[in-house]
Length: 205
Image 1 (spheres, rainbow, N blue to C red):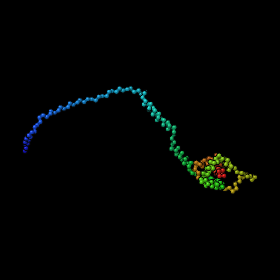
Image 2: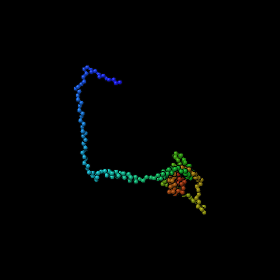
Image 3: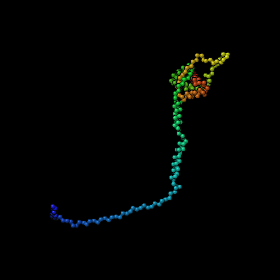
């Protein structure tokens, strides 16, 4: 069942306005204006001969080439050469046991000198060789000269009466020992012991 709505009774004093303004006109749509195109730029001809770019490249190439030439002048050592040099250095510092034979009295004086100087017998020997290196030839020759005595049939070399020899044990660097052996050959010593005795005889006297 549909209920009919009764119209509302007018309100006293309320009037419907009749002087309402008319609706305003719609604004006109503006036509879009295209953006101005930039002025065309005239292309200038490029003179390749006057361009400095190739000169910079040439300079750069030269600068790059210089280190290669320098590196070519300094050849690097191979691993084998480095290992050989290291092995030689290590072998030169290796301590070698050595025994030399000197007269007993010289051996005692040698030991006493080392105690007095608070050093080793090896250092005393090296000091003796350095101090008399210019006289070693004469010192070795003097110890090599031995008088001979003839018994009418044979020439004999008598040994020094009562002279005893002792062995002195040393530990010397392999490089220093090699120099001592070279000095023995250079100055005509018959053995390493003879060179040592010749140097110590002058140094300890």
